[in-house]
Length: 365
Image 1: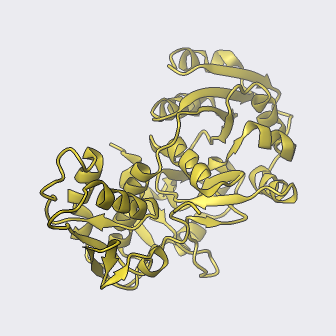
Image 2: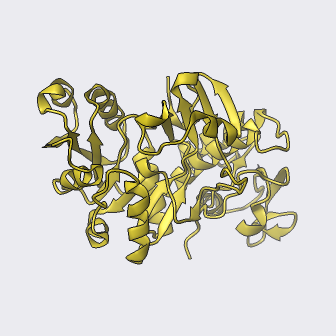
Image 3: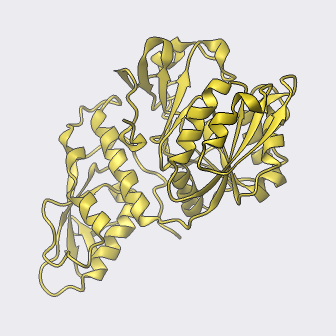
């Protein structure tokens, strides 16, 4: 069984523990470093092995823990680290900024967010993915949003991306300048405004040439590792469909950012879990599986929800990964297919900030 971050605990129940080298491998309090038992910990402080130890063995053990999303840190470098510990891993272990925030024992703790960001960076090292061709599928009826959306697509790293654009009641001449200045290959189709949104997506998807299809919303923000993280989750989970949590929201009329970690009912809203729901603007699926599912339902609204229902009916397994590289924009209710009042997002917020305040993984200016 592969080691994955599935089951990562956002809010740890315990503090840091010492990770030390023992005969047979890494251990915590004299017991083997077993991932399920480590989940309640805030993280592990590494005590480097002394004496005659083959360096590649401890490094392999650390990468296994990183693959599970266990936060790791070290006060100092191992004496044998140069040339053995990969440079990115050494830099991450030495980065202790995430420890600078003290847990406050509530779901509002900024310390938990910084800890999760650190965990994701470690996961990326431990789960490298092959560069894949991804077709980014976006339907838009707002020509003023297209340029910014294309710019966010251009930032994507570690993938070979192409864009398939469904212009929904929009003439190509309205977005010609933005499309022609985009560094990515862009294919488009003009669709009358009377055609349902889901069918617009299908007409765009029919022109895709990538191995994977990624749904993209024109008014949301995506970090530069968004697609790479989705491919990583697809790889380590073995899922058919992956997506992220809908966790960060920018409430434009209020000029505020909120983060939710629970549903409106108060139930936990975790990441790194098998689920029936992911953020609609983050759905990633292989082109082959997309066709097996039957594409998007030809509906004007609730397209994402109905697609996920159809995926489950077709026997597809859905996995929800972290949402730290994605921010949903919310204006007034009538502007979105997912219509909820701004008060709803304020009510479920675990954190609130003035202005645009995404996760650090967004690498926003």
